[in-house]
Image 1 (tube, rainbow over the protein chains, first blue to last red):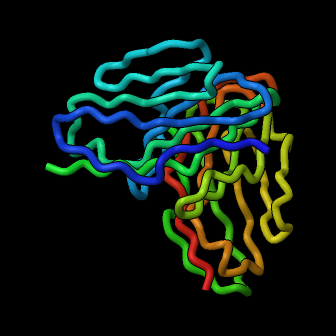
Image 2: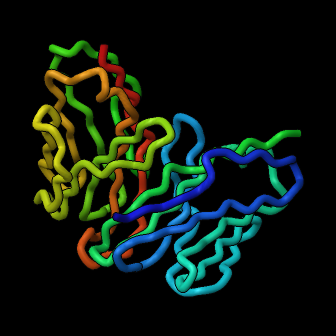
Length: 109
Length: 116
């Protein structure tokens, strides 16, 4: 079967750095998405990786290793507004999105 | 308005009621999706429409009935629901897809549904 694993919950301190991991086992791979979802709001697109390596967008970076079936989202200089759930999703060989259950990130002052 | 909008934002209904959820996208996209989001579970894809034709139905119970009258509007008609159907129902759209598409999906804020 197809599976996406990510931690259920993480806690970090304002101003610090946090890494949210995502591992996947899917039938084929056509890219990996990260979304941010604040409580009661729409998931919003953060990044899309299809090639190995690190892509940086301001305070957020996303890394992909296809050979290891692994990605992480790196958040730097954490702010209170970064408290949210972070969803990892993989596009399989049929271009169907396989979703993880999300990681709830709690930022403490 | 911009993006993807959904109404109502909250809905409480009894098991014998009939209600409809509405989604509208203002992005000029050709594909629209219904998802179910339950606490601590992955998003579950329910229905996909591409150019107003249903292209995917992931074994969803018949008490959920989608309708896509045009590429900008999507409805989910609900009847005789069960308490376990209580969840956040999200609508999304993408430029094309889903077949052969890596297009990003853009989500609405969802309808929080409670079935009593």
